[in-house]
Amino acid sequence: MVGFESSFVETSPSKEKKPFLGYDVPQGVDIRGRYDPEFAGILTKDAMQFVADLQREFRGHVKYAMECRKDAKVRYNGGALPGFDPATKYVREGEWACAPPPPAVADRRVEITGPVERKMIINALNSGAKVFMADFEDALSPSWENLVRGHVNLKDAVNGTISFNDKARNRVYKLNDRNVAKLFVRPRGWHLPDSHVFIDGEPVTGCLLDFGLYFFHNWSAFRRNQGEGFGPFFYLPKMEHSREAKIWDSVFQRAEKMAGIVNGSIRATVLIETLPAVFQMDEILYELRNHSAGLNCGRWDYIFSYIKTFQAHPDRLLPDRVQVGMTQHFMRSYSGLLIRTCHRRGVHAMGGMAAQIPIRDDPKANEAALDLVRKDKLREVKAGHDGTWAAHPGLIPAIMEVFTDNMRNKANQIHSMKREEAASITEADLLQIPRGVRTMEGLRLNTRVGIQYTAAWLMGTGSVPLYNLMEDAATAEISRVQNWQWLKYGAELDGDGLGVRVSRELFGRVVEEEMGRIEREVGKEKFKKGMYVEACKIFTRQCISPTLDDFLTLDAYNHIVIHHPIGSSKL
Image 1 (cartoon, rainbow, N blue to C red):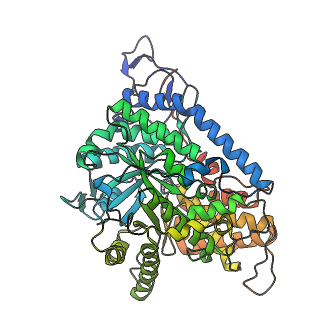
Image 2 (tube, rainbow, N blue to C red):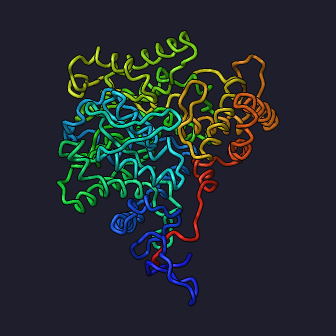
Image 3 (tube, rainbow, N blue to C red):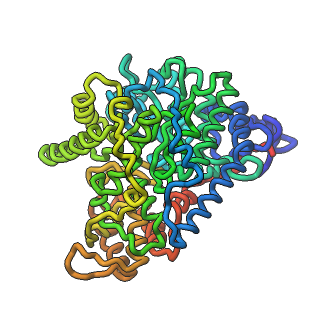
């Protein structure tokens, strides 16, 4: 990579100098993504200096936290079980509280989530939900175009100027004049690098790039237009330990200091979506107590994490993923303890995702799906959750009605639903093996969903409608690790009554047959143009691997990174 110190480059002595179209970057920063004049308004020298400062200050802490994850994995693979840390018992039993919720987001009864795509952002902010979580993580394929254009879109959204001209529908989308949802942004997890930007010779930590660019460009306008003097607001994914929350708290303090705003302005909701984190909820809130906006039940990733944590425990084989719902004892215990912990500390306890999408061509099936959503949300609000997630705007009226009917005119249930009985929830409750059966259809569905999601992700789409559900990386991960677990231990498909065990031969036949079904469902032309064959190779390789890869997207990421010979670097 050539380092350009000047804004002009001379191609030959006899020719005139031509403008060098590259990003103006600070020392030690190397941008390897495609140059775009619109992107240059995001990747400014000052913004990249802020990102570089964050990377340099915190990369050592991040590397240590990732090493601690590896150490924990070794312990679990050696037979140990996750549990409450005796060393932090004083935090769990202490009388302390987080800062009270900002008035702008006291009411979060329905939140919608989706990628940082322009039309999606407008529709989500106009959806009638109280909050829109704009996602750089599981709902986004992190190509250079998706990431930086996402920041362009969010900047326009925060400024209130975002619009989208849909030429195919001859319609212009823009924000409503009132009742616009409050914006939360979810950066990537600590484990994901971004190979489009190098700082001091190594890839930047993805979440520091996401956070740094968004905060730098939007903190002032957000506080003025959305946060009523607070903010910006964030969701934080994939944490496994409170030390990771402590890094985020330090990042927030560093950003507040840079902006000259009071400590505690930034607020963040942590997704409890890994099994180790459920034993660290008090500790996570404690580390973020001045910046906390509560916890969320990230239930699909939580199931994925349960399998991954117990990958070396053949006595903990899960049933079909469709049977692992919130009525399972370990999931109900997780939800109850989260509500009790959050309300005891004075913050929101957010419920999980309703992934259903409207079935427009079958009113009867659509009503049946909506009925399932209503029952799920009624369970959540009666359990004490303060709000919940929806994947599609079409679900919002039904969910809003359920929460409003039960919460009445209260903004939340923080002070009215304490769930003191959940104090008796034990480690055994949180680790109980889910009940159910394994079937051939479960194996087939895992395979079909996993391959189709991976194909879409490789093509640049991270949120994919499949079989009337909105799938993202979390559900693809469950499919992958469950297939791996069943293959690794030759699990019996006991729900079919035939005594068949999962083997490489059986799986190979299932893959071949499901690829044929996918081609029939999507059509030969789309199948040919899509990356289904490449996706099949990636997904299958991870399912049959002797060792379980930590994340599907870490392997697939190398297939979407494109380095351009002229980006910008100053080394």
